Image (cartoon, rainbow, N blue to C red; front, side):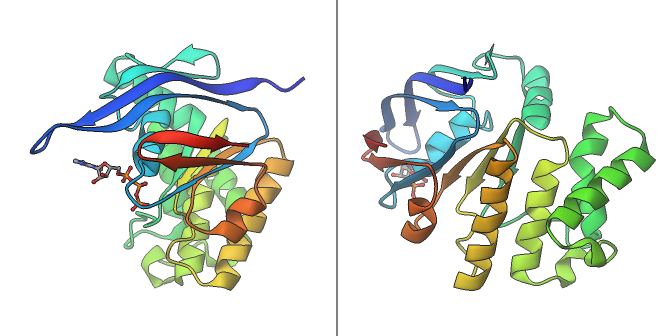
Length: 226
Ligand SMILES: Nc1ncnc2c1ncn2[C@@H]1O[C@H](COP(=O)(O)OP(=O)(O)OP(=O)(O)O)[C@@H](O)[C@H]1O
C-alpha cells in the first residue's frame, strides 16, 4: 500500500506589504509516495506560494504541514534546514547554480552541507547523479559554461544528491525549449518510476497532462484535484 509522504491542513497565507493580502485560503491536500503531481493555475493564483510552504522554504503561515510523518510546521530553523536538506530536493526555474563552480561541485554542495559522508563518497555519488542526467562528461566543466538545458539537469542532479523523499520543482521547464522540456519530463518520469515523489508547479499543459495528478488553483484555492 502506498504511503502518505506529505499532508497539509488548512493552510492560510497572508502577505503584509504594503497592504495585507490573503493569498492562500484553507488549503488541505495530501500526496502519496510515488505520485507525480502538477500544480497548475493562472498567474497569481498562489502556486509558487503554496510550493514554498510545502517545501518548508517559507515558514510564515497558518495551518500545518507534515512530511514523511514529521510535523515540520514550527520546527526551529536549524532543525528545519536539516530536515529540508535531507528530505526535500528543490528545483527552481532559474537553477541558481554557482557559475564559477564546476557541475560536479554544484551537485556536491548540498551533501557537503549535510556533512554525513566523506568527500570521496560524496564525489562518487555526485558523479552517479550526473551520469543519471547523462552529464558525466561535463562534470568538470564550469556550470556557467553549460547550455540552459544542461544547467537545469545539473540542478536536478543537485536536488537528488541527498536522495530526498520528495522532489519539488517550480517551473523547471519555464526557460527551456520543447525538446529540453520533454527531456526534463522524461527525467522526472524516470525518477517517479524509481519510487520518488514529485510535485511540480508548471504552466505547461503537455507536461502536466502526463503527470499522475493535476491540482488546479484559482484565487488561492485548489479548485480541481484529480
Ligand atoms: N513576497 C510577496 N509579497 C507580497 N505579495 C506577494 C509576494 N509573493 C507573492 N505575492 C502575491 O501573492 C499572489 C500569489 O503569488 P504566486 O507567486 O504564488 O502566484 P503564482 O500562481 O505562482 O504565479 P505565477 O504563475 O505568475 O508564478 C500574487 O498576488 C502575488 O502578487
